Image 1 (cartoon, rainbow, N blue to C red):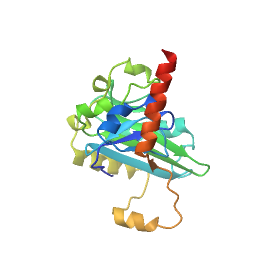
Image 2: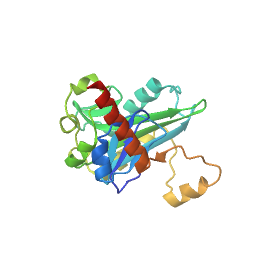
Image 3: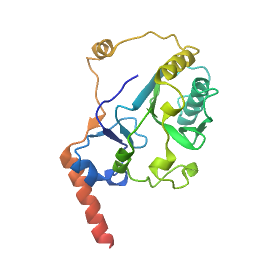
Length: 220
């Protein structure tokens, strides 16, 4: 599990101006990262918990390397983690308590492997939601609610230590786990790894903002 200490916005592929309030991001110098797994756009800070599952295609019995199959299995996995806690559900690729989202997912799938990545909203600062625009394509259950009416804090349902404990227990029903520190992981992958997640430059953000303003001017 990993915590990012700086407020970051993870932008999915596509036109940045459709997902971010670029003027605010530039004004406040918020770093914007384009992650290779795609998915939606989220604010990442000290209150975010990441869980990433990297699996060979045959690692999980009955799971095929396709988005729906992986997503369905993940819902069952986290159903174990959150059993008896809130009204946990997998709804339209989101993890929710009732109708409030607390976990967003992204995937990357190749012929022989897949990654399932989740950003859990352990906590968040309300003011940071202003960096995000309402997405043009949103799940039906959102019902056009703004960010603060749509999401919730996981910490209101269980402690961080309990989440880690229950997630570990759930994973141990499928895998043999071995703790590793970040330094060891980095050393293993030093050679030949091609980074496809990128930090966008300030110029890229300025260009996207200029393009957006130009489009608005032409349409008015």
